[in-house]
Length: 362
Image 1 (cartoon, rainbow, N blue to C red):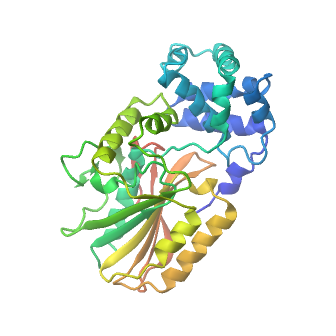
Image 2 (image 1 turned 90 degrees about the vertical axis):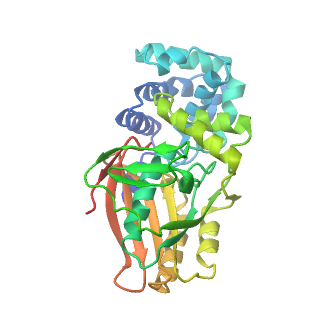
Image 3 (image 1 turned 90 degrees about the horizontal axis):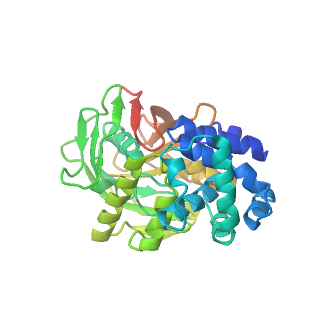
């Protein structure tokens, strides 16, 4: 699941890492965010506490998502009304990089103490649009197992935006699934054949997520912080967060504060329920975990997969980034004690925030 990870994580040089992150934003429809990210070079050179923290950053800049941490802080200044000048950058009215550099530097100097804490922790960037790929992967699995019930768990769930995918309506090409009356409607541009329709008795029996520091969507300050990590170039993403907040107000997602490795191990060793598939999923988070955690989860799946049966299958759905191509790839594995033995299948490419999905599977 970590193919190509070394490409991203090899970018320890600050300039190269910053340019990679900026290009990644541009490739995915966020040129204004890319300009703000590039302006961090000037912040790094400034005589501010934030700049000194960036300049002295220990470890891998991209593995820590450092540019996205502080980019969230700048967006937060606009969302809270502390300073409205970045609105002209995010709207595309200001596109000159020198002008953006000067503005971002001035904000860093004026709001140094307020921005500095944004470097303390990783961004919380779960995006509901990504659940289109996760659901498509689940439908693909549903056509290959003998069971119709699915018990799901998510790694890196953040605020549980995707942990609530059983409450979303999806139109994936010609395939529809989920409650039609849901305020969250996930309708990406679909390229290629539609994924298989769900079986008549298809059911998600439970979804549980974990995060090191889960965000409570019922807390207005926490919800605003989550919005700050959204690239403001994409207005639809803000609307989806609002829909997620509304759904969480009715019934909070099932989240626990836990290490991903510990959580996965605990979920996998629970007693198996005949007739139910146990499936783990995650999106755009695998690369940020320590190698030891990745190895531990992979080993746990190999062990539990060896004990899987057609009545108790095990699945793994991952939507993660290929750093060489900037493509987000949906890869799925299945263990069922029969013809499936954990082989990895590349099912689709997707926009990182779910604007489109290119289905590759038959």
